[in-house]
Length: 118
Length: 108
Image 1 (cartoon, rainbow over the protein chains, first blue to last red):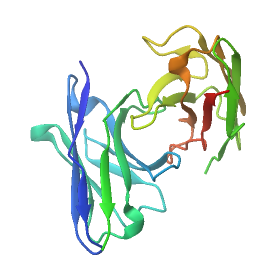
Image 2 (image 1 turned 120 degrees about the horizontal axis):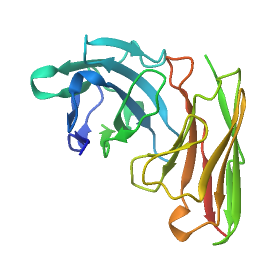
Image 3 (image 1 turned 90 degrees about the vertical axis):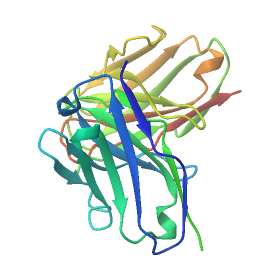
């Protein structure tokens, strides 16, 4: 069974750093890309960026490129989304999802809620 | 970047109704169009990929059609568990993997 398990909810202050995780199981980690998708409260789905675990190559959506970093740890089949300095506007649910080139996001994690408030 | 639009943004329907949601791409995406269902507090779930292929386990009352720039998702015989928000997504010219703004289906 394919599973994407995400780390728990986080409450942080503006300026804090944060790393959230997505640990996958049930398939070969290197065979699928992992994307991160943001959903702000009551809003739609926004693609943040993706990583190819086969070579750790990343792409980012322009609005997020300068603000987040996606990395992976192949030894534990885990992908990370991290911020070095959070803003209140980063408050959202973040989902990880697996996919391949030109393919749909066929499995999703349950989401990690990030709350940034002073 | 390719822009995705959906219409309507919301609709009210009754159990048993036939519901059609439209998605339009700003340029041709062939049939690289996917549909997702999201219920409150839950992650999105893949329903349709490649414009018309039903994801395994998805009820056959869901169907998709279209190619190029215009696509539709049809629910034939709306069930209580179908009240949710539906998103389209293009996977043809990426990145970015663009989603439509969503269509909320609620109970009339």
